[in-house]
Amino acid sequence: MNAQFRLLLATSLVALTAAGCKVAEEGAKAISDTTVAGDHSPNANNVACANERLEVQLAVDSFTILRSHVPTELELVPDFLRTESALFDIAVDGTVVPAPASPCA
Image (tube, rainbow, N blue to C red; front, top):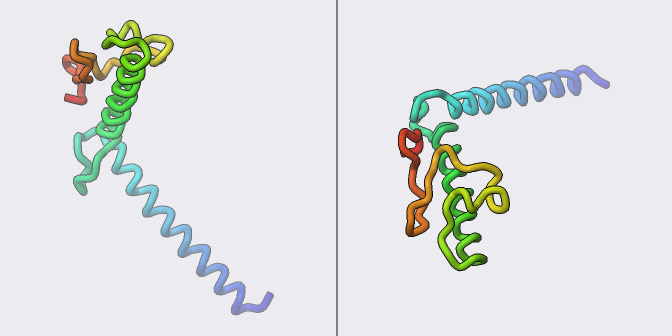
């Protein structure tokens, strides 16, 4: 290996490492305890709420199609959900609503 190639390789590795650090820093902001990260991007709480809502809504829709009635949360466990949702409840019309005192309100 010649000296120019080694220098190019070393410079490339430093640049890639520095770029990876920026991504890790942005990821750390996304899991802050606050509602919105400093740059107003959604954080882990918002992502968790959105995913949980979609999961429960999918279970409700699937149950309703297969069993021809709107389920209670208890009816969804264990065939459609592993456990009852701590974040969301199911209204009598089948809509998924935030549970009382849920951070997803």
